[in-house]
Length: 616
Image 1 (cartoon, rainbow, N blue to C red):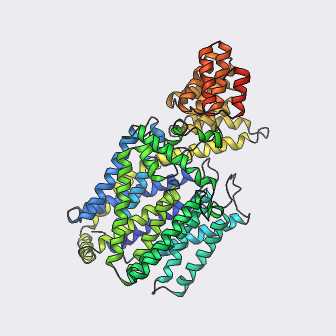
Image 2: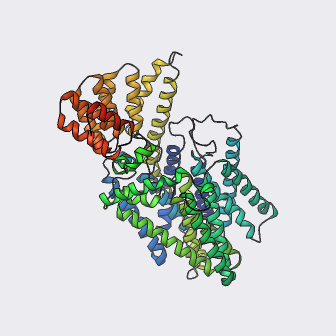
Image 3: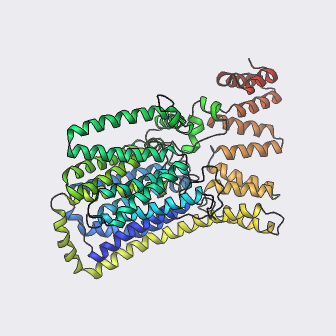
């Protein structure tokens, strides 16, 4: 299957491990988005260089590929093509490619992740898989140690963090706890391997205890659930292999426990006081909104990573009444629903099929092996199942998701090597390729460089947009210290950056207004609104300018547009009704007042409607 020399093959494997680890670990505290944008940049650079290695591998083995290899290549290619089509159909293509604010789950992120996934299927084997497990331990130790440092109040970065302090290198306690759960439980399960050294055996429990403390202190149930799911899956499957009668008891008990736990999370049953959190129950609103988006746009979705721009239009009326009119969500908090809602049925179905296939192949892999190899395969499969479980209630965070894709690729790689004596054929291909080394050495670097150059250029623009925006905000908070003259320089850099995300340009426009340039600010906002006519922040800003100019007709126009995209915002409806009263539009006034009373009858706004506007 692989045709690289052993040294080249080892180097490729190290690129995969070090690159994946760098994606998870890297952040830049002097960036407007310290985590997601920076991880996307590393992902683009790593996958750009790996692309040459990947293409070289397929080029030299295309005629000898197995059916499973062809199927995975076709499946991933179909996923990328379908996602690209949905991206091109996205109303704001820059967001479709780059991803939304502080999410970065656009086309480029998934393209990079799939490259590393395919590369995993090409370079991982039973000879190097333990190196991956060792890297998991190293990464688990680093992340848990940093998490404990954050909990102790000794973080070397003064984060402006609205969450729990335990965010590790992922920027959110839920993401951090989920990844720590996966890495630490894998580390602990390596105790089942017999040929580990004493140091390796000791490291597993140490990492698990450190991570468990960090997870518990994070107040994130997500991590504890992932640990439970991985552990239960491993025990149930292993007991099924060894003694099926006992395994049925384990499986039945695990199902009962999981059902009770799920009920507890949704404020039902005996564990509700322990497991219920409003952040979990609120996901029902996110899921139903995503489902409505999909039903409304089943073919291509509402637009790649555009969930946040459509959420208020598709959310239920009860959501703003419970959480506030301005509170929103930029993600469905379920990767499957997110893809169906934003990219459409083809992308969603292919992603679902891919993961069902990985699970099936993983089960067959474990059942086809024995002894140490079987345990290794079961550790990988259990960890991958844990990742999939958290993805049902979470967001596709790049620093976490990279390991879901690498674990999935590892499972398929090992499965391919157990089919048809593939491992024996590998050495023949290695020796054969060494005779053509000069040609190969030219092809891979040439392809990697050709892909890496645009990746570097694009990443540079992203990096500059993030750091310039950070500097713009930092200097503006120190006005009067001789830095005021510097602010316009950074504002212009952000506004002139073709790959700066719209929200960064929006903030730059606000800085123009605050620095005494309202006409320029308004002009920039109009450009932004033209590029994204449904963006509620842009529309609300234009309402502000219209009110400043005392232009009632424009205020009405913008608020009516807001009403279309945010129909359950009673505050906007109330302000719109007041404008109708000023202009004497009694029919519209009565209709708007009745709309407020229809879904928000018991609010303070309803009382004002009745008293001031004459609604009934």
